[in-house]
Amino acid sequence: MPTNSAQAQVSNETKQAVISELIKTAAGRQRLAASMIQPLRTRRDYTSVGRKTFLVEQLPDGALPIYDKDPGVTAYVIGEEGENILAITKPRRVIFPLFEIATNPEIPLTQIKERRFDLIERSQDLAKVAIQVEEDTRTFQVLDAIAVSGFDDLSGQTNPDVTVVAPITPSVMADAFGLIEQHDLRVARIFINAKDYTDIRKWGRDVLDIETQASLLRTGLQATLWGAQIIVTRLVTPGTVYVCCEPEYFGRIPVRTELTVLSADDPKARTIGFSVFENLGIGAFNPRGLTRLTVTRG
Image (cartoon, one colour):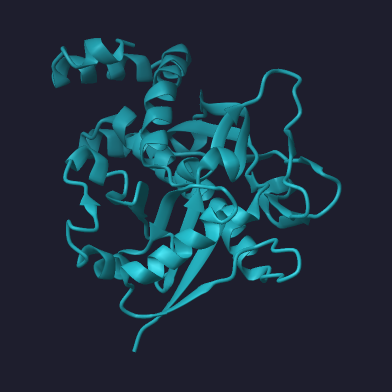
C-alpha cells in the first residue's frame, strides 16, 4: 500500500485500482489491514474523550500495570472483561486489570460494487466509532463510580457534588474548580453535554476563550475556561458536568496491546472483514481530581 504522503498525491482512480487488486488475494487483504493501523489510531486519539481524561501509558513487555494510589483514598478501576468497576481501598499499590475491546467491521462484496465507497475509509470509520465508544463509555463509568461513592467528610476521599439550578454561572463553576484545587491539583478538562454547554456559551469572551478552529471543534473542544478545556460530548448525560484535574494526576489507561488490525474475511457470507482490537485497562487512582455538577432545570 502507498504511504499516507503518497496517497495524498495519487488520484482516487489509482487508489481504488490498487485496493481492487489487493482485495483479490489473502496476502493483499493482510496488507490492507496493516495499512489501516496507524490512520485508525490517529483518528481515535484525535477525538477520544477517555484518552483526554486519563494518561495513556504503553506498557513495556513483561511490565505489570501497577500504580500507587494516594493514601487514604479509594481507587476505581474497570474490572476484568471490562464489565464491572472495582473500588480498591487497600493496599496502596493497585493493579489495573486489563481487558480487550474489539470490533469486526464487515462489508459485503456486493456493496463494494454497488456503492463504490472507499473500502479503507469505510472500515476505518466503522472501527473508530466502535472502539472509541467502548473506551469513552468505560471512562465515564469510572467517573460516575467516583461521584456516586459519596462524600466522606472525615476522610475527604471524594469531592461533594455541586448542585446547580440552571443556568450554570461562572461563580458556580469557580466553586467546582476550588474543590479540586484545594488538593493542590489543577483543573484541566470539563466534560459537558451540548444542552448544558449552551449556558456556558452565553458567558461571552470576557470569561471564555472560545475555540474557532474547525479542526479542533471536531474533537469536541469548544472553549477554554481559566486554563481548562471544555469538551462537549453526547456521552455525558444532560444535567451532569464533570470537572477533572490533569490526566497524569487523575488516572491511567495502561495499554498492553495497542490498536491492531487483522484481516478477517468470511467467505461463506461473502464479506470483506477486519478484526480490530486492543488490550488495555482504565482507572482512576486519585478521586479527589473530580468534581461533578448536577444541573436542575425547570
